[in-house]
Image (cartoon, rainbow, N blue to C red; front, side):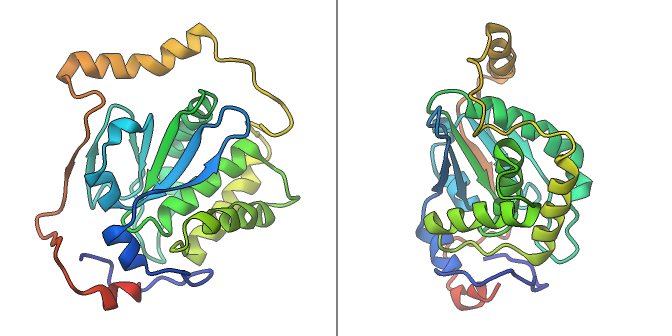
Length: 239
């Protein structure tokens, strides 16, 4: 299985085999909105490639250089899994995703998938940033907010292990974001989406459906050297 050669420092250890989860596990629901019952799931590239993505209303691909996902509403964040990863490089895309995710979460029982290669670090960092911004501040400071959501995620997905670099950058972004919060959602129930907003949300899907007829269909492209039968799980567990 392809993975980065540079070992990244982690805030903690995975409580379950990342290799096993990548090979055999499905995406895990790590969050449910208390009002709309909309959910956010974290998964791996293998999940995104093999499952029926039409079941999801919104997909965030945090490793587009490793796998290409075709979905009516997929957003890409090109983040490398090394100690040199820079969230600031995708700050504009993150802002757009932030607003779109907030809208999607207001729709009853909508489903969001955020994935990276393993579903252990990059996708976790992005999902934590999104939820902290939409539903916080709740704990008093950025690091406590991060730790709150991270610990909740880990209850549902034992293999997560975010890099220390990404955690620090997420906390930096959260401190900056507090000056222009979109929430908090927990203390104020949002009004139902207006027809104008609903049309805005659905319009890209309709346009893409008319353009190529692929709306709601999921396809994928793995790297040419991808080996689905690799037995090198011992090495992968060390990542």
